[in-house]
Structures are given as C-alpha cells and as structure tokens.
Amino acid sequence: MSYQIEKSSGFDLIPAGTELECRVEKMVFKATKTDRKYINVELRVRDDVESNKEYKNRVLFKAIWSLKEDSTRYNPVDISNLVNTQEYEGKEKLFNTIEDVINFLTGANMRVRVDVEESDQYPTKNVCKYFFKTSFAPKKVGENKTDQPVVSEKTNDSMESAVTDDDLPF
Image (cartoon, rainbow, N blue to C red):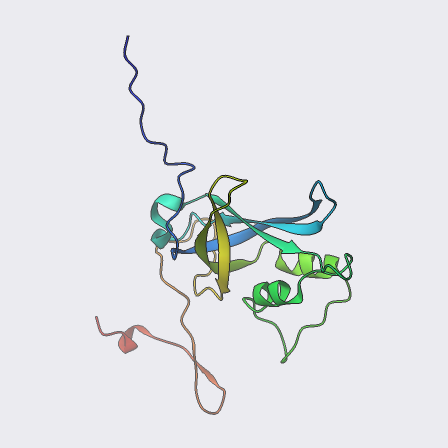
C-alpha cells in the first residue's frame, strides 16, 4: 500500500516581508497561563484584493500585550500603529476605554507586513509586524470585481480633485 501526500497550502508559512491586505475580524481579551493579559487581534487576509493571491482568507494574529506596570493598560505603541492605519478627523484620536479602541478597529481594513517568528518552545509561526493604510476600498455586492485602488489627490489649496478617464495614460 502506498500513500500520496500533497503539500498543504492552507497553513504553510507566509514568507517574511510579504505585504497583504487584511481586515480586522475580531479583537479578544486573553491571558497566558501565567496570567499575562493581551488583546488577540485576528486579521483575515481579504479575498476581494487580487494581490493577496494564494493567501486569501488566511488568518493572521497580532498580540497587544498589557503593560507590566499596569495590566489594565495595553501597549500604546501597538495600539497607535493600528489606529493610524485608519482615517479620522483632526490630528489626534481620543479613546476613553480600550473597548472604544476595539470597536473602532473591528472591521477595519489595513495593509500588513508579515514576519516569521521562531521559538525554542513553540512552532515557527507568522506574525503581523508592520501596519499601513490601505488604498483598496472594500468591494460591494454586485460591484465590478476589479482590484483598483481608490484614487484621490489633494491639491495645494486642500481641494479634492477627481481623477477622470482623460487623466489616465491608457
């Protein structure tokens, strides 16, 4: 008897440095066995962006750890990096609670740079290392399935100018 084993494509590591368009699917409070608290950010690779290729619908994770000196507060740098991928009014965004942050980010789209994390204690895994604003608007039901970024330009006097077909080089 022989067995033919095919390489699994669903859980293979994504190469370090790969950038993918993702959506924050959910954010959940968790704790380690030693009671270190963190927010588990679950990001799903978008299936409506052609550049995501074979990684569509994969799930990636980001842990936002609580501060050692105050376990009720979470790493402000990680939170800032995620929040700054989104558009908001003014120069700063004020959140009264961590739940406000979670509500703001859940469902948000962003570009993620993937890294590979190795450990002596755990299997090698993908982690989300860097976060960027996305230029790809979500597709609506029935909308043309093209993968073109939303384009708008700001002029010097802060007026938005629309891009027309005449502006395109092709």
